[in-house]
Image (cartoon, rainbow, N blue to C red; front, side):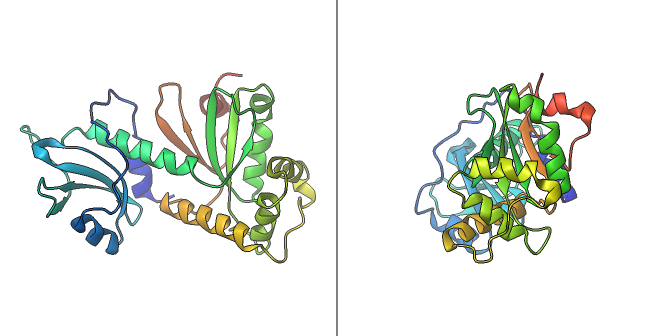
Length: 253
């Protein structure tokens, strides 16, 4: 994980949120926003801003950016808006806006559910089928999953070994991906599922999408775990969490 991503994602706090949220970005976007997209900006969401402007939360090279569109829709300003005290305008609300938009991207990824859909806590984890630390996290989480306390949504990627994509594809492409994933994790020490030698295009598209999302989040190793703590704060953990941190991540047993 890059230091830049760590510095801005970890403090995404669930503070009182006064930023007026609007709908997702309109299609097509105003011309200045389209020009920024052509330069590599990814528009995440939009919100009401002072002075008749419309604000946009965006990513550029995996870094958060705030864009303000003028009231006439003809110009876009990239950067922070300062208030009368010289402070960044509504920074807590902006952080929340980024957090919500990124959580929605996790929700929209191609994940495999491990645990009850009615569990009070949901986690997302980028998972490689050959990753021993992913398997350790899977094993450590069993008491919470079996008790219905948490659902872990594994976003499958294939990056560690040459056969990782084939194994991830075998799980994602199974008629019952959750059962296939469970069998794989239980048999991890002996190699788990047999990798596909020819990955169907539809399954490859899902893997490619997950990989792009992983890069967008600045993650380059597995597992990368995202969760919301008891106060609703979005947090991340890189690697298999130590035993004493599991209650904080997974909730009470």
